[in-house]
Length: 286
Image (cartoon, rainbow, N blue to C red; front, side, top):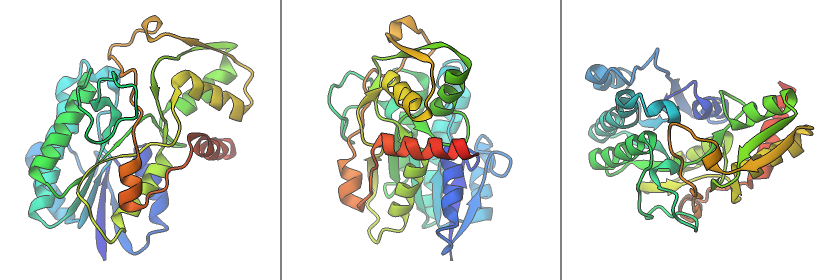
């Protein structure tokens, strides 16, 4: 039985893979978070992975607090880069498949058309820089690895934009949301399904792939969709990023082109609104 190791098991994507694991009972699943497998313990990471001895590692762990990363540079580098290098190396040396999850933040946001996997990378914040370093280390140490870049992740688990907006729209009369950052949200359940489609595909094709839901929207439009589906009364206004300064700069445009993942693995990419409705239905029922 093939053993799958999931890092970041308590995060949004790890939690969605946990839900899916019931459907894939042909695998032995090992879900870890920092208590079970501390990725910051670089010295013992290889031996700790060897104890688990997986045939596939899906790395969902990352330092994803984008603003905090600006001051927590070392922690970001350890989690997003150095630990990835070690996992990739271990996988390569132990005949283990490796799927590493990356981000649209490896781009500078100066494009105006959907970004393909070969688009030039040029991160504008520490999170993006460390994630790009992780990608490079991953492919250097394991040319057979698969990297999936994703964007604007949300789910019924953890903290995310959808849950925060749903709460604020019930608490406040009005909200200002940034309307000049363009991309597409990713429902973590859809990403989890895409990862399993790849994991069970007869052809393993190494390289970088992009995945997010279909649609090209701003955070403001995303908020309007949440409002509409949730039936919230709150008044929502669009504002410029310059009126909402954050410690970390964000890419203004990071829409991902999903052609490669669709044609290579037959991955289905749902429309963002369809997936948002599913997630909000789950939240309502919980």
